Length: 95
Image 1 (cartoon, helix red, strand yellow):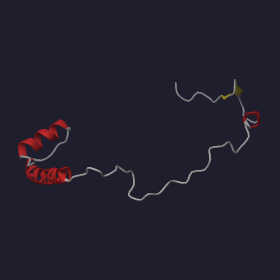
Image 2 (cartoon, rainbow, N blue to C red; image 1 turned 180 degrees about the horizontal axis):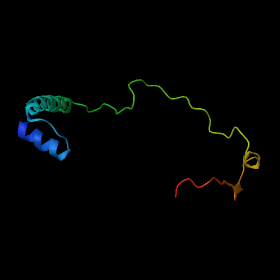
Image 3 (cartoon, rainbow, N blue to C red; image 1 turned 135 degrees about the horizontal axis):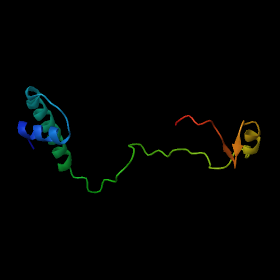
Image 4 (cartoon, helix red, strand yellow; image 1 turned 180 degrees about the vertical axis):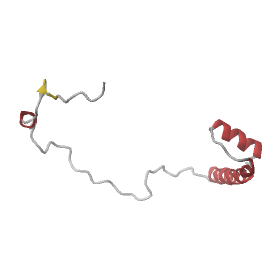
């Protein structure tokens, strides 16, 4: 698929991009090359190819999701200047 200069100008307008008129032919060539590459990739037969997230068959080692610390909220809030209903109260900074 080949793009013309007027099509590039229309795409730029839709994308709210400002391009100079003298740069439009270069953009048209570059975008046409990208679209040709996409056409080539679409032409490849991928039947039987399993989709994958990573080219290596590796599994992420994860730690078990268990609680490692005890709840110390009361201890932390005991030293806070102002606390109400389990929430820290701070001075108002926005009027």
